[in-house]
Image 1 (cartoon, helix red, strand yellow):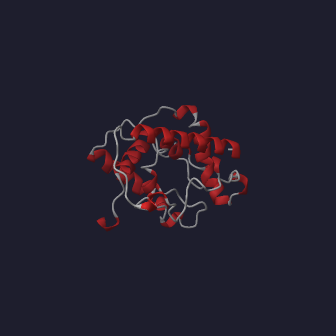
Image 2 (image 1 turned 90 degrees about the vertical axis):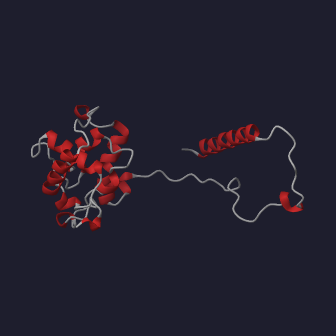
Length: 194
């Protein structure tokens, strides 16, 4: 984004705010404050007087290797979406106690060693991995954690993106991957559950 574009965006935002202020203004007379200091500038930051500097573009190649590896899948998803064979795929399993329990067992057997019991990326097998395993516990409520993305990530793993996440498409049936997704979406156990 150029400085000119940023300046134009700020001007457009200011114009929109002014329009809203006019629309929200009372129709009739309003009592004025008797204080003489009502028009005096107040100390502090004036957000409209701040110079906006253009930030340098983020260069993935200049990022530390663990960050670069973690970001590659996300950038691929943002720029191109998931591969065609995963597009519009939806989890066919309902959020029932039986499906969640099956997913919990599958997660414990296949995922917890690296991602940890609570989905924090702190499983014993994942402690020395760079980048560290994904923080699944906080991923589930993110906008990008859609079914097709999760299926793609688990099925194909992270090898194409330089991470240690194994591909599970030959280890688990697709139905089992969906059960794990159902379990993760239901929420990881809280730490004091035992």
